[in-house]
Amino acid sequence: MDMQTIYDLDLQGLEAWLKEHGEKTYRAKQIYSWLYRKRVLGFDEMTDLPASLIAVLKETFVIMPVTLVEKQVARDKTAKYLFELSDGSTIETVLMHFNFGKSVCVSSQVGCNMGCTFCASGLLKKQRDLTGGEMVGEIMYIQKELDAEGSRVDNIVIMGTGEPFDNYDNVMLFCRTVNSDHGLAIGARHITISTCGIVPRINDFADEHLQYNLAISLHAPSDELRDRLMPVNHAYPIPVLMNALKRYSEGNHRRLTFEYILLKGVNDSDGHAVQLADLIRGMNAYVNLIPYNQVDENGYGSTDERTALRFYDVLMKHGVKATLRSKHGDDIDAACGQLRARHERNRNDS
Ligand code: SAH
Image 1: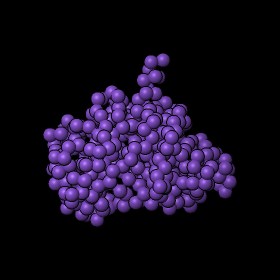
Image 2: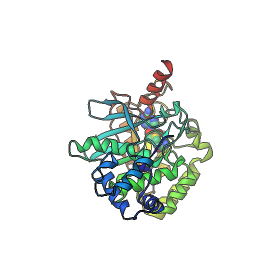
Image 3: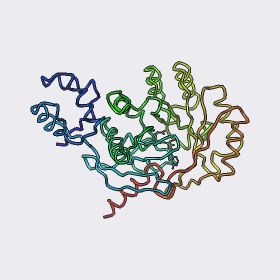
Image 4: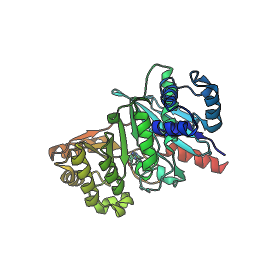
């Protein structure tokens, strides 16, 4: 049987586990410190724990849940990691270097069922959810690498493969652990959850009053178009989605991010920009315009820079703040799920 990673236990869970095993609960903070401050990869290194406890920990848990299969580094230093999990599944994680710090983009599921027509992740259906600890492993593997150069993970975006709000509890455990003062202590405002718009979970998230950033993959300003791009829109059409987002944003006093991939000739006209502005104007929100990473399998093209700038201008003129993101790592398999899709294809071919 596969052994569980100890990263699957948040501080409370670890305390509960210790209690169950007749140990003192203060050991939880000691263990956390070994895991997330000193970042050891073996229980034997936890020298202030009793030998008997170390023995039980070793019988019960592994520490690092991921192993590296392949790493691609782009000219701009964007690094894409293909990891294997204990059951042989593979996932992708990306490290990006921005002037405001290092951001890691983590996957939340093995494959994805949302079926967005432009996305490479959906080429492979969901096999399973990631556990919270496996997601923590994505961060810890990269943090261990960064330790060697004396730097750290500054920001986390849950924008890799998978729909985080289709794996809500595990994603929240992950966020708690990396955010915990006893864990990696990455500030909540440096953690962004990106969802395609699963309204009931947006409502749950609103009710928890957490400080993590919320980003919404909108990509279309009308139901007619969004229905075609994102099947989730059939279940939660734009008016329903916007109501939930207004409730969240107003109830939590939080600014929202709308992600909008620019797809050549599909959603990038002046008319689309005006429609989008009408939808968002007045909300505490801004639009992040994202250049599309072309995926060969699905036939969408990337909007050229001039048209992108024009779209940006129209939004601003119509009273909506926007940012135009530059491309990262476009000389590697940077599109969500691309590296993994290629790997799985090769695996099946051989
Ligand atoms: N399921 C979540 C998180 C994962 S996708 C969500 O939908 O938000 C993260 C972001 O990358 C989404 O905005 C998604 O639409 C976008 N994306 C997917 N494929 C892309 C591609 N080929 N190029 C650029 N962005 C892409």
